[in-house]
Length: 209
Image (tube, rainbow, N blue to C red):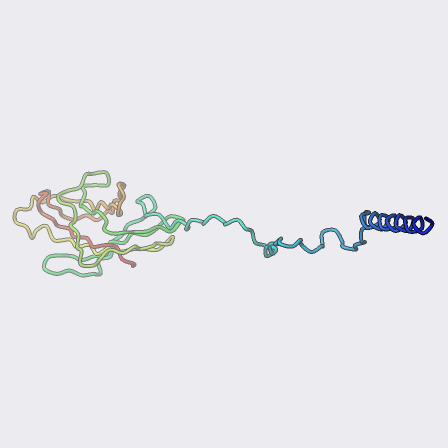
């Protein structure tokens, strides 16, 4: 009987010790101390960090800027007119340069052919036919800085060359810059034909002077 009690007591003691050991293993563990500085720790597994943007740049795309506008077309109000008859003459015709000079404060462009006709006076209507175009020299944009000049070759055919010419006096030339509805008057007395079917004038495209 005594040996059985001892054995029974040993079993109980052993079971109690095992239970105590099991309880101690399930208890909360103490946290390990960390020395990481806030904001400088390594990213958690699987996380990615974007590289910093270069200094002075932005992730937004800047809107494209439009090309600066070029000079406007030259207008009568900003031009002066003159002729240079150094071109000489042939077969009853006189060749001259029609010069338009930029009198404004900004650059402008002469593009193509001017309109030219003979006129009775500064305010008068054109006399006869307007100048026909001489297209032997192709048009080109002529940019005039303030004070610069563009030239077109103007040919005047003597009115006396035409037997059926109804001859009248003209006080000069009325000149329309290309693509302009306003005009300049250039005093230069000459003879004109009032017949609208007789073309005394021929004009070329503007070229740099």
